[in-house]
Structure formats: structure tokens, C-alpha cells
Amino acid sequence: MSAQESPTKKSKFRLKHKLEAVENVLGGSSTKHAAELVGASEELVEKWQDTYAKAGRNALRYTGDDGELPKLTDLERNAQRAFPIRLMHECDSVASFFCAQFYGRNDVVHVYKAGVPNVTLVDLDESKLEYMREIYPDNWEIVLEDAFAAAEHFAKEGRKFDAVICDPYSNLAPVVALEQLDNFLKITSKYFLFFCTNDILKTLGTDANVDEFAMKYSEHLGKTVQVKDLIFRSSHAGGVYWCVVKV
Image 1: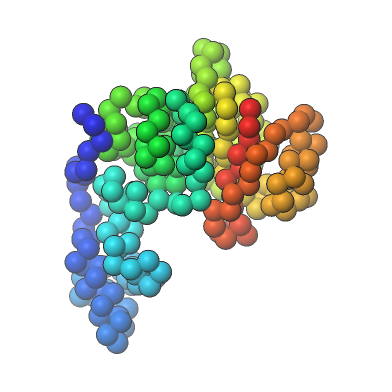
Image 2 (image 1 turned 30 degrees about the vertical axis):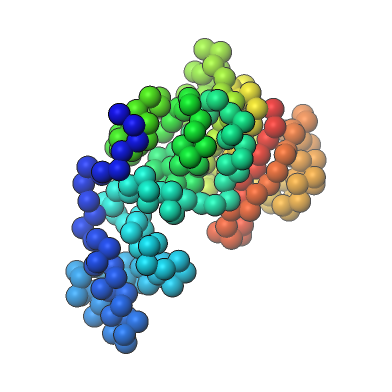
């Protein structure tokens, strides 16, 4: 089975519900009234209105609401554009850790679009991984395991991937970058990409200047780290980036 487009269940709110709510607000109704019309919360209606204002009608097709399952085309449409997809064209194998939170919208969908033949997805969220198994190619490897434990296992087995990607929750980003780097580098052949937060920059006493970051990062870890790039992702929490380390 190749990548599929049909989700196993659908969100309570379809595009028509979201548009009805947004159009009512734009027409002068209160968010409370618009929410009551479609049976949604005011918070959801405000979210839909903001999404519509920023990106238009198509962006409402998939908004990540509770219980909403995206099609692969939804993920492609809403993918985070900052991801360095150009690097994936140099890779035959990729392992993505912490991949299930947004069904791979931040990174995995770019790996898919780049046509990487050998992909391993690692996460602890069984239900989301199972759904990802349905929408991504069926020859991809799915590993239900803690990311740090899986990296250790792969290293002991001598497994390597051309690129390794880590996109954890913000609170785990410093653990990946400052405590677990060695385990991930052991299984990386070309590029290690990780979620770099403003907290990491503060810990290192630097900003997003690549050369200064590389110097401070290497000093902190006590070894040379070849930082190839720091790519701005969003202004969330003071600024977040993709950090690309060349191995």
C-alpha cells in the first residue's frame, strides 16, 4: 500500500462548519453566537478566524483540532516551510524521533516529498504512529519506543541513518541538544537536525548567529560540533530554529 488519502475517522467539524462560523463573525456576529451555530467552543471559532485571516479558506481544511485526522495533502498544505528539505535529497535513509505530535507536519512530510526510500519513525504515541502508518508509505519502519532508548538501541546495533531528526516538545529540546547529542550523532552519517529553542540559546549565552552558536555550543560540550545552519522556524517562545549539524 502506498501513501493513502482517506482517514479512518473524521473530525466533528468539517470545512463547511468552520467556514460558516468564520463567515458569521466576519458578518458582524459575536464569536459566541458563531460558536453556538456550529456547536463549537468560542476558542475554536477564534482559532479558525485567525487561521482564515492569515492563510485563507484552504488553511481551514485541517487545523489540528482535537480528534481531527489529516490527510497527507493536508499535511503537505500546512507543512512548516522552514524545514531544509534540500538536505533530504542527499539522503537514502532518515530516522525521525518525536515525530507523531503533528503527524509529521514539521518534518516527516518533507522527508516523504523528497522521496527518501528508507525512513524510520520513532515515538511513544501509539495511536498517532498507527495513523501515520496509514497515510505514509507502508514500507516505512515504525518504532514505538522512547526516543532516547531507541537511539541507544540503534547505536548498539550499529545502525546509521544519513539524517536523524529530533523535533521534541520544547521542554525536551535542551535534553536532546545538551545531554543526548552523542547518542544521536552515533547513528548519524550526514546530518543531525534538532529543534533549537530560545532556552538553549540562553544556556549557551549566544544568539542565532551560526558562527557564534557553533563556538559556544562546542565550548559547552567540550568538543567541536560542526553547525551547518540555524534556520528560523517561528517566533514561538522567543524564537525557535532548526539546527543542522554536519557529521
